[in-house]
Length: 94
Length: 247
Image (cartoon, rainbow over all chains, first blue to last red; front, side, top):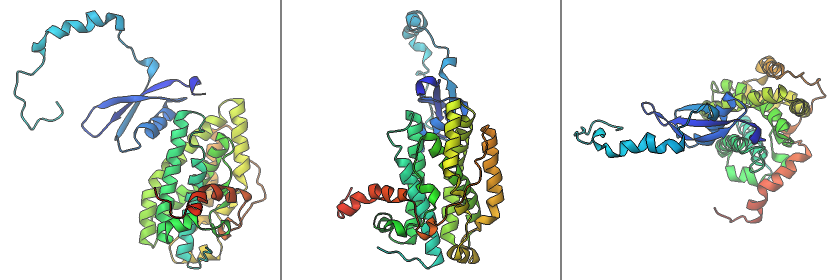
């Protein structure tokens, strides 16, 4: 039966100020029940304060066959990491 | 253990506590049998909310474990609606819609109880039950306004449970005493609101309300259907057979 239902990707905001993070997926017949299923499946233990659900079919993904041209060129560019700065202790979430 | 609760407060705690316990136990029967994984988890969550409510209420009424596991069927004070069998998913949803819509309206008013425990209990539980009511409404609408089969099953589920509605609004002497003391709201005050809320969900589900049936009363006084005995046998078997069993 759930095979008839579309898949939805679930994103949870753990607390105010943090980004929504992808946590998994649920099957549901429509957006509202997708939210209910996401709530019941992924926020049972106080994991979040906000939920997003997105139809999985709407996600545009990069082609794994293009991983070489897309991602490998970044490997040799260590200077792009901001590791040459001292980050003050007061700055969180970096 | 015969529990003769003459005190209106204890009796009221048992009525609400037994409703939550029996409905929670019923829903837990779905665990591992839900139509899909997501719904299985969803129903288990609803069951856990209700067992949590029962835990608070029965422990306020006395020794919660003894009340749950060592009372016989005639001593249970739940309404007949909550002990009805699960049937198919639509029948379970119909029962949940009819009970939690009533429970939600009751708890909203119970937050003004003269009793501090009941006020605090209601404030906590009303949030859980708001979600139960919404979820049951959403499913009723989807099944009613779904396929020919789902609409037929939803209508049959409502029809099965319909005759147990009047009991929810019955005021007997013991409840009247609790209302008199300001402990409990008078359910008759929200019967019209309840009827129109249920009618609105049924209309949105593109269904017809079942015809009025001869009401069945008596659960609050221990006159239960045969279904409750079977439910209790499963629920009470372990602590009665192994009284010293520990987790």
